[in-house]
Length: 167
Image 1 (tube, rainbow, N blue to C red):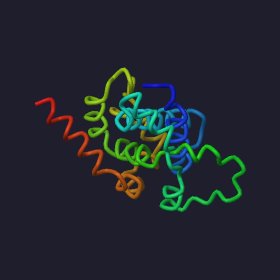
Image 2 (image 1 turned 90 degrees about the vertical axis):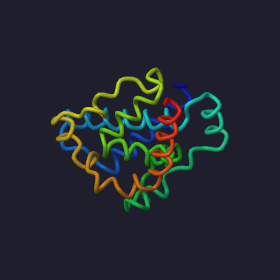
Image 3 (image 1 turned 60 degrees about the vertical axis):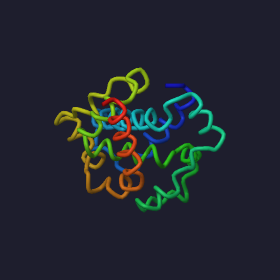
Image 4 (image 1 turned 60 degrees about the horizontal axis):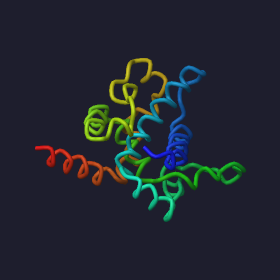
């Protein structure tokens, strides 16, 4: 994956952790961040699979987090450090929410993504009890549903099309 997508991955990860905070403690925070980052990295690899896609993203911009913030009721009006929110890609975050809510879907998506792009994703695809305990909100399908529902259909279509191409 191109390094040009690092700001999108970082912003998407931060948004998920802000909207769905981890359990208290540094260890829980680290485990939750690893899960969110793996989900966002895989979603980014699926959404922007080529260098041309990354260039188009930089030309058009990722869109920001306004709609996601509205859906979750986030109020960051007095947040002086909110420039990172402009790097949030709504589709990437929605796809990451889908992957976090359904480890089986994440495993299937990882199968179709270039492993060199998305890296090792065991915390996402095979979460242990520690991962679930560290990120109860981040892994809760009902809480993630408003975000996941935004762009679930295109993700499922993409995965179905890639599956059909391999048959």
